[in-house]
Length: 456
Image (cartoon, helix red, strand yellow):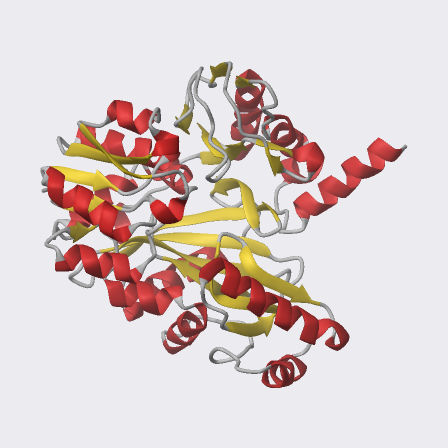
């Protein structure tokens, strides 16, 4: 096992990884930008290294600075968290070239699955259902239009290098296709430095279901059940739960088996997710793979009792999986709400500032992963996620009630600071959410209802 790990990230995930390191007796090295000099992980770490100014491209995305910090402090391994460099194959390769263990899949696997068009081909080869669409990136608008016409509308144009809900556009008909294709290519180039796109059929009224997998370097792969990530706005998740409510047990079993099959075929190593869209007819289709720990991993930890970060470290250290499929037993229900520093009344615009008051929820079976504290200045330079509020209960109805209580208790205040707490409580109290079985259009319907209420 490692003696010292550098955490190449910030915010709540850096704190969460540091805590597992502590429990495993692993030394912690934090990196921080000028904007994050007062961050919580710097206080928790054994050592901390300043790697650059506020802009991420000059700090958290600066590969030479991160690797130099790891080498200077004598770290054995680098944990990338999620976002930033976590799915950058070049970073994974540079770590290995410098004698550092990258806590994640091999660089070639990240490259193959990070290219969403190539990932579709891999999953199809593994016998995982995929939506009709192009078999690779499309070079011209005319070529893309031909594919769209062949598979039928609506379609979705997606960036090959997209992620985080960005770099995609739904196209309802032929007349609006060329403009959507051109705009998506331009956005992909701007956001990801890669303007390649592909087209697949859009599945309306679908549910977004992902399956957590663990795989070691010896070919052993298990899944740890599913998470429902359908509560999202503009393809960005707001709330997740496990298990998915009102989903046929046989379908869940098939998705788990497909996720294991796809991960094994791709040569996956580490913790990751295989994500699916489930249509109203009960059919499921591969959407994408994530080669990292995910924001919503705590709901899986809550129902299985498995520390996924600890498993990442064991796998990266060369140990075989400590679990077999029969050892994975899910109990009860868990829900996670993402508490963002955003104003839902103004289109979810970020509202950074100093937290004059920060009192997270507590009580039985309540977990809060956060880097916030009273007096903390939330920087404007990074993602607006402030905390993840997670609850567990013996069944879903009790978990929903517990989440309502926990959301009501959570206190965040500061000049100009707004959060999604009230909006999340509105969502979890909504009859459609309480009934379960909602789809990815749920939040948009709720927003339309609220807009209508404000005009009456």
